[in-house]
Image (cartoon, one colour):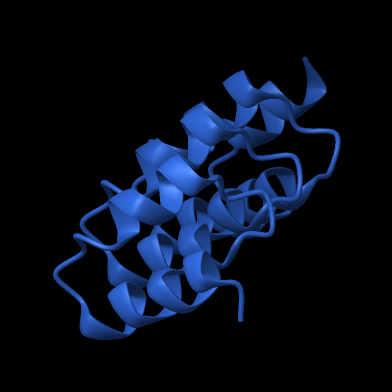
Length: 103
């Protein structure tokens, strides 16, 4: 409940810290991924508690830094990485290909 309140804060930095919290739930992170500030969305995409569904949503973000953070998240699943292979950004596609290959 406290994280949800923090994710509604008018101060972007408070929302960033909330999105970075390792205790964030899938619902908290989905809320953060809807934030207008790309830094909040990128923090959620980097969160070690992010689920496959969170990362799938992050990979649809208009901002490439958010998509890149999702592709680099250690929790990214094979399905997430396969989606990243279709990204319009070449570096995200290349990174996903390397991770799928096992490098």
